[in-house]
Image (cartoon, rainbow, N blue to C red):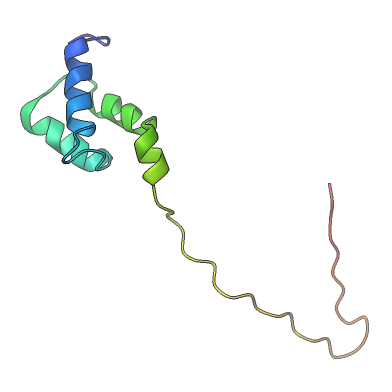
Length: 89
């Protein structure tokens, strides 16, 4: 299939945008596509399609840990024993 193949686009859209099992992410979409189809550059095509999928980007969760509680700074033992500065640009 060529780069602008409508068949390739239809397959990719059907697998990824399916109302019953669509928008499952890159790995699952690639696995479903490889089960029945093959074309040169399939992995990168699917990865690019999912990268720009508006539904997937809105539903994507955070991949960082929660920050936790703030910790107070230690109280200095005597005056001027601890000095901090704010740098502004």
